[in-house]
Image (tube, rainbow, N blue to C red; front, side):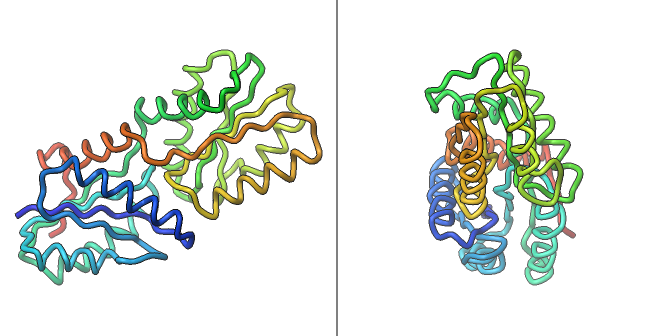
Length: 252
């Protein structure tokens, strides 16, 4: 029997964890599998180990593990696989296939455009749009967020689109705000490329508040991505491509 294991990041903020669980519950409704469990890499329960145990105890003979992460980085490449390898050794007779994170696609850019539109503030010719990623030391994160920024730039040909990061990569969000302060743009849109709320979202708001008190520029903070049907579609695609063998990372 095939099980699906959804692996979320986890947060110290209970509201973020609740949003993740609500999101996964919607994703589960779209799949026919009788065995489906969610878990968290860190900071929240159930752990990957606990949820994996639950899948096996319910009769799973094959587990499809899906990292519910926006981009491919250290968590997806190393941290999660290390735990899955340990579980594969615990249950050697249970097949394990590991899928891909959500990744870069036009679907994700559609959501970014929606987040801009729902502010009800028109993106003008001299507007500056900051696409804010979590950040990582992994160069693939900069590559992927840069690709997303390029795709968004194509949708907004008369505006500037710049990517920046909250941690571990440059330019930092603080540096981007400083650049925005001295730019010719009178309005600055800020799109948090985050799945859910959390401490990083609060950090973004605090940084905006600090610069708004100094300048007369208009800063417009968009919503984080949150649950969106197109993200649900992307998760479903990741499940199906593993199930159909289009992308399979096996554990021996």
